[in-house]
Length: 207
Image 1 (cartoon, rainbow, N blue to C red):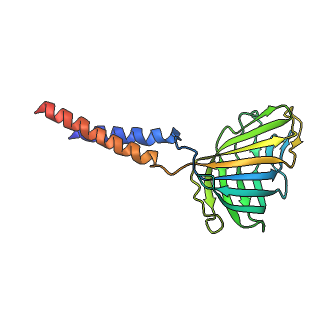
Image 2: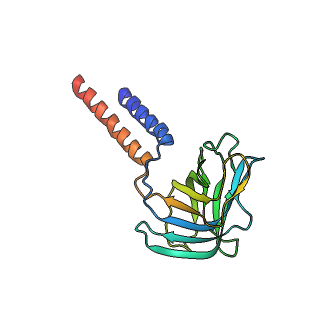
Image 3: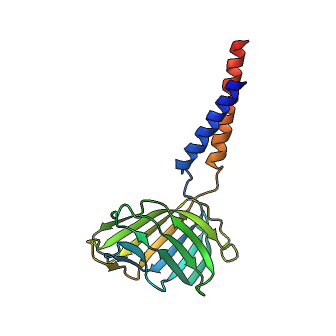
């Protein structure tokens, strides 16, 4: 009996700590397309964010690409991301999308570690993992699920250390993951069954 309990505890412990680094959810859920956004990078503070009063057009789509809702006078706000560690090691930050009144939150999330900006000619790409934290279902009938991905294609920029502001044609997209069984639940179940199997095998050998 002691061996069974020990096996079960070990199994559950492995399951718990393993899930801390697992993000295997597919990004094939609803998504938001953002147009006319403007982003700015301050070479002095090494921070990347959106300009003040960043008016954007936001369209929400379901997993099949069907248009759910559109906001033509919305606001996208990026909390500053710190790139002092380099353009491939941005930390902190997050995003919030407001309705036209500037006070009603439609969708929001926090960025994960290692956000990055890469450049190619006069364009650049910003990308970050994101944990989607809120969606106002009263305005958008879409169920965004974490984790997700935030990516933006920036125009007329230069990543040579100087400050830049994108052209008004910059676009961004927020991808959401589909609903699947939680990894924690699956690993706990599997570990529990494995513990029973080990206990049963050892007991049969003892008999």
